[in-house]
Image (cartoon, rainbow, N blue to C red; front, side, top):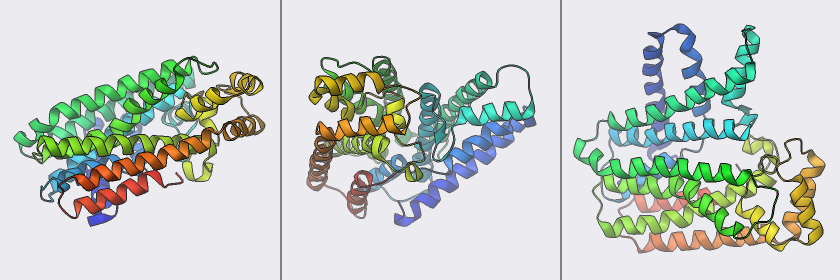
Length: 354
């Protein structure tokens, strides 16, 4: 992420854009300030992976460095912010990146101001608006990036598809949480489908394809990007699933075992159900998705995930997917330093603690 100062440049594009939006909303009323301020706080963190894959996908396809390309890449960070804000509302999460989730912040604002009505409802409603603003801003930043209209036109179809399929994957995730406490036929395939659309395509493949199309890449290179991006995106999400159960809350920014409380039907959980004994299945069924799950309950579920071999199988899958993605990258005809940076990004995306 530090190659050619990309992280700082993306941060600068985000900051400049948010400053302008603060002025736009100030015309409405000064009371709108938290909509921008809280979003700015959220966006001050994050790995900037989507921006990086877009930018370096464009560079590796032969395009030159220019500020407008950084601005387009920054647009993906607003899409990510929207997804995080709405995801936390749907999951009822308390924390994001070590700070209160957006709906919790607005709820606290309501209570502290002693306003009328229900503070939690206000918090959720305001967070929905903040997420919607981020979706609007992602499009505005893309269209106004300064890249030639011809290039933006080449990328528009994938930019639109990325956003629509992300929402479809999120909806599948929401559906599956409603049946989290039961063994289901085809649960592993379903978990991989959710992972495919909610994370794998949107985190790596689509940003890469967007960068490639902005650069005018041919079909062969775009196919290589898909092969690289899909495998890597799945490996990235599998690592995220492991961290959601076994990660250090000080590093992940979310309470330990939160994915278990939320009843997320991840590949890790699907594999545990697949290999569970009757007794283990009973424990999984009774505890998974329990919002009041304590540390002992988290420990019991972790033990089952380890004992069924689910954790080991996921670690093997991560290694195999990374190997597949790097092989696809090695076969592609790419410019330097793009190839080297994409290789390093792949390693960083799968070998991480947060």
